[in-house]
Structures are given as structure tokens and as C-alpha cells.
Length: 446
Image 1: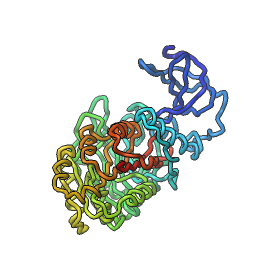
Image 2: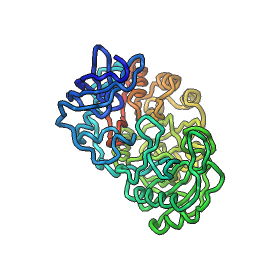
Image 3: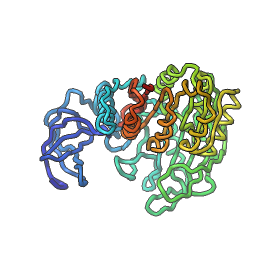
Image 4: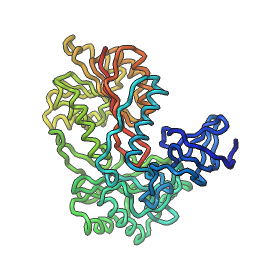
């Protein structure tokens, strides 16, 4: 089998990116936008030493679960992978993705709970980051698995204000003479648009390859005609890579932050801050986490800017947040001070180093009521952090993951210790219509 070969396939299951998986002549073939039991004619478009990627030419046996995607950009834009099937089937696919990871990577025989649905399957995202097309001087999204931009005038996953913003910003682009950054030449000023919609507040950030934004007042005036509670900032990013944001933000007009009050914690959020993009699912997950914490001693091992640690402090006897980024720890300290959280201590440093130090200060009674919370980045936990946790032997481990593969890898290490039983593995549809899935796991000491 080689590139451009025409083959006939029957889809058997799903891969980790929600694509259909088939076997042809003893080789695995991945087919995006296909569904289980469909018989398709396909063309091989890419090969590696282990796998083959194919595109659909014709579906000969159409699945009953298939629907017409409502978005005109589906399959052209790389943002969504699952609009071609009904929502209940989407939940089944995501459950299967997590189950496969737990079984194959984690080597764990444990049934994964059915994926919990989002109340909103569209218009749920509170944030967007859009590149600007230098060829058309228009906002867009990247095509699947590429950095080629397709122009779009609305995204069905976004809330109302952000979609309105897209049209207004395109008007700004068309009425000004600003140059657009080109990834090939590394020249041009305007790179991308980042925006966050929180309640009645809209925070707009223009990412630039320069020091100032020409016509900024013109843009702000356009925005003020349409939005009341508004902030406009720039992010100065002169790096010659694909990272969207630098740490250099400057507020130009309007408000700098949105103020939220959730779970008795008052906090500020801006376009630099991390915030779960689906408020409905975030609340379902956090409610479940807080149910697991009853007057415990809690260590939040990847505490970031301290928001989850602060919320946990409302339920726990004592909380320690460990974070390696110094600036994030400072933000966490300010958050704790603003909310009068006297039972929360933030520690700056590597969790693998700081966790053993912290444990040496706890009494035996505190250690017996110890819960460790893990909410790592997509790459999962460092092995030395997992080793430190296993040496600590907490009474409970709560692990929130945005990547089933790295979650399964880390659970394998924990399971090999033979010290813990898995209470439950619960996927949540934080990202409807996409391949991504959030998973909450609770483990109890044997």
C-alpha cells in the first residue's frame, strides 16, 4: 500500500483523534470524518512507518448515526472533527476514546463511565484565537493539520458577542492599511485576534509583531458602537514561531479585566489568564471535585494562578498549592489575600522537590487525611512528580486531564504501585463537536 492508492474499507472503531479506523491488507488506516460500520472507497494521502491516513472518496454504506454538518466550514476548518454525527454518538465516541486509552496505554481493566454531555453543543466557547490571513486581510481558522488559513465570518462554537466581533474586526482590517504578518516571510504587523466573552464583558486583544497598533482608537470606536462593557489591549509578540501570545500585554482602552464570583471566590480574568472554555461543563466537573473533599488536607500539585486551589479552600481544612512558575504563584498569593483564605498556602517550586519537603512538615493525622489534586497541562505529569506522589501515599488522588493518552500513561504508573483503587473514570464533553475530551479520575488508597 502506498500514497494515492485507491482502497475499499469498513470502519471498525475510532482513533484518539475521533477518526475512523480500519484495517487493509494487515495495515491500520485512519480515515477522518468516517463512522463505525461505514463501508467507504478511500485514497491513501499520507503514510508513516506504522500507519496510513486516507480520505473519503465515497461512502457506500452510510451510518445511521451520520448527519449533515450544520457548519459551512466543517472539514475545511480544523476546529471541529465531529459535526458529521449526532450528539449522542459523539458522546459514545469520546467514551470509547478514553476507554481505549485506559485499556491500551494504561493497561488497566476498568470500565469508563459514559461521557457527560454539555448542555450546549454549540455557542459554548468563551474564548477564541484567530489568525489573520495575509492573502485576504481577513480573520480565519487553520485548515486541518496545516497552517493554511481559511477565511470565516462566524464560528458556531463561539458565543454571540465573539461572532459579532469577527465581522467588526474584519471591517477594521478592510478600512485600514495595516500589514498582516506572514508566517513564511516573518514580516507584517497584525498576527491574530484573541477575545474572551464573560457575561456582558468582551475582552479584545490584537496580537502584533511590533510595538504599537495604528488606528487603535478607530478600532475601539467601532467596538464601542456595538459593545458596552469592553476592553481593548495589544499583545506584543515578535517571536518568529507559532506561539500565539507572549507575556507582553498592554491595555489600550476600556477595562483590563472581567470580575467573576464563583464558588464564593471573587477573581479577575483577562486574555492572559487560564479559564475553562465551557462554563457549563466546568461547573459540573468542579462540583464533582468538591464532593470528594470533606475537611481534608489538600495539595494542588499543578496549581497555576491558584483559582482551583482557592475554590478547594472553601471545602478543605487546609490547602497547599505548588506551582513552578513564579509569576503564577504571585497571582495565587494575591487571589488568596483578596478572598481572605487563611487556610491556603502557595509554594513556588518544582512539585517533585517541594512535595517531599511539604510532607515532612505535616503531622501523622494530616497525612492520613491527605488528598492530592492533579490538573496538569496536556503533556501530563512528570514521572518524578508521580513518584513523589506515590511516596507521599495520599489517602486520595483526584486527577483532571485534558488528554486521555497522557492520563492513561500516568494512571499506568500509579496502578503499577499497587497502592490505589480507581473509584471512577468520568469523561466530560468540555469541547463539543471536537475530538477533545476532559476526564476526571478519583483514586482511593487501598
